[in-house]
Amino acid sequence: MLLFSALVAGSFSLGVRAANLIDPAAITVARFIIAAGVLAGIAFLMPGRGRPRALVEAPWRYLLLGGAFAGYFVLMFEGLKTAPAVAASAVFTLTPIMAAGFGWLLLRQRMTGHLALALALGGAGALWVIFRGDPAALMRMEIGRGEAIYFIGCALHALYAALVRKLSRNEGPLISSLGTLVAGGLLTAAWGWGALTSTAWGQLPAIVWITIFYVAIFASAFSTLLVQYAAMRLPAAKVMAYTYLTPIWVILSEAVLGQGLPGPVLLPGILATLAALALLLKTDEPATGPVRAN
Image (cartoon, rainbow, N blue to C red; front, side, top):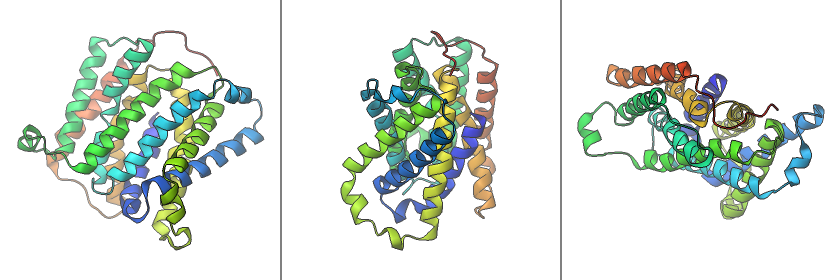
């Protein structure tokens, strides 16, 4: 999940530069096709990594997983049309709080006082960054349209983290990830067929293709594997806890891309999210229910 947080961060910095150049549905379908191809190649070259037959066992499971995953990515790119990369990554850090709720609802994973404190601290830090360190804006709930759209997507991501464990039939992270990406791609293609066919793929700027391949290989194929692996071994809230590092990675990547560092006003929020991560990693409460080895 540490690697996951770094890989996901790159999608914010690239996504904010490509979001207004291609329809969110079109880029989501493209990334899912490429990511599914990568995982299918791995499955072919490394037989025995999971149970391929599980793909035909209650295939409706993958429609749920793929729908939640696809919804997250479509809403992410829709939100990045107007939301700054750092603010969007801060919204992403609200995912552990929502994951804890879904973890209790679907898996009866208990919320300890230690965990609640960490999530509250991380949520406060995220809100500080989202509202640019302006308490008056927080009181007026002045949240941008892009951040609001992306928040709904993050709720779907949190639901996905809990559904992975709830719906697992011990097929292994590779096979489960492949089924999720194929189902998500089909659902997104059906929903956004008009945008998919109207996109002038041969005329897209280079930044769009760089973004597509980055998010397909690193922020879809590999990150899906990482989440699937972690979700079978950690409580849903702890799986998402590493998202608290994402704004730090985004700030660094934006600085490398020439956008400079944010002002010191955001520092309290960043420090709060780091403290929340430290608290969560000290929590050794096991997940409720058996943890399957894959």
